[in-house]
Length: 480
Ligand SMILES: NC(=O)C1=CN([C@@H]2O[C@H](COP(=O)(O)OP(=O)(O)OC[C@H]3O[C@@H](n4cnc5c(N)ncnc54)[C@H](O)[C@@H]3O)[C@@H](O)[C@H]2O)[C@@H](O)CC1
Ligand SMILES: Nc1ncnc2c1ncn2[C@@H]1O[C@H](COP(=O)(O)OP(=O)(O)O)[C@@H](O)[C@H]1O
Ligand SMILES: [K+]
Image 1: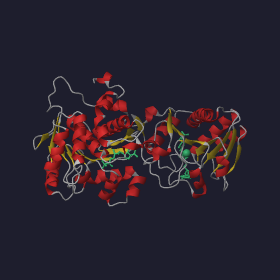
Image 2: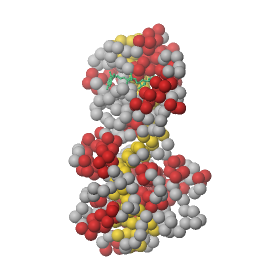
Image 3: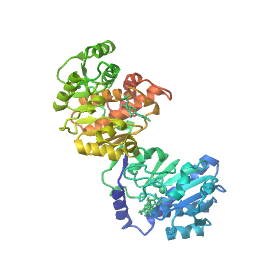
Image 4: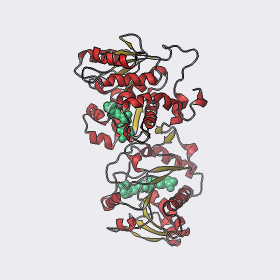
């Protein structure tokens, strides 16, 4: 798990530690880590450090102070450093240290993108956790910078650290060096993709940080939590999944959701739907029972039309049953007023936008804020799909990343719904958001195996789930 803390919590932890240390200690720790990372990156990119050219961009806040102190250290290693200040007021001690070490310093001027482009490395210290709104117009040209390695101090300047919203131009980083803990923007879409490799540096604040605001679930976490079949189990205790999916138009969604639930370890799968998809489901998976009966969790909506009265009636009854449910695709169309955290809504950005009456583009620019809005207005757990999947539940925010981009293929969402249904049925007493994030991580890992770097078919993702489970790091050591 990678933990990220809110700006308010980071500032409080830094205040607590600073009260115990000589002034400037934390900034010097940050600068020392930046210096080491910049030297590493320069060596990787150019084969050396001394004699290489670096441009350091330094803004008005402490982020600029970190950058200037790092500039001084790099200059002492023999790097030719130019510091361009982007504000009239920059950290005085940092500026003095940089000048004393031989750094050339001057204010940023129009056209300085070219100076940056000619460098081996650019260190972005324009703004950190106090920044937002994207690069200022005068620096916007940096968004097209091509050539030098870019290292961001704390985060690419202009990102909103708490939400990961991208509301303007940014200079994407190859490496981001952050202090004390990750910030939500490092883990959330769309910001995470602009941060490059993330390096979290311990500056002594760890013991002063509360519970994280956002957690990224990793493969080892899934291995530790995924429910195994135990000697005392029978098919009912392992969890029966009821699938209401498919219709006259979308028969395949039923097959995909059912296949995924079976492969993810459901004790039994019941299918409810019209005759044609039911026949296809039976052909593909003779294990499935067609018809009503008791279930431990529901998968509702893949391939269901909003105008299909029989399927919509089954969905309504399932939502009112009190059992946990995955609420996907056609089940998102007419949500009842009474939803709870055991209902896991699984929209993609377009579906979430429709739920809110918002623009899809607005959701994509700030997925967390929009997912949170749906969680707050419905009471349901919200799993928003995308290159990073964001889960908002009662106890906080979880993310699943690292799915291959080839997963953006028709039917992949139906497979996720089935995997999640099996997990909810098997883990009835756990936080549904945690279960949902685990399912999304497993789904992404199964896609990685199915893809092997190339195109994949959604059904292959479902079929890769058992191998994905057994290849999780720590699976064997944790009872599998
Ligand atoms: N407090 C501490 O002791 C520590 C702070 N650290 C550094 O301090 C930073 C936070 O410092 P600050 O609170 O001064 O905040 P920033 O350094 O992020 O600066 C905020 C200022 O930047 C300007 N700004 C905001 N958005 C901008 C944009 N889009 N473009 C250009 N300028 C913009 C505004 O004038 C704002 O007041 C962290 O990101 C980290 O780099 C580190 O040194 C670790 C220890
Ligand atoms: N760019 C991407 N990189 C990685 N995974 C993605 C990307 N875009 C979408 N996904 C994942 O692919 C799946 C697509 O689901 P969905 O949009 O519901 O498709 P469908 O409705 O066709 O089944 C989701 O699990 C989503 O998180
Ligand atoms: K920065």
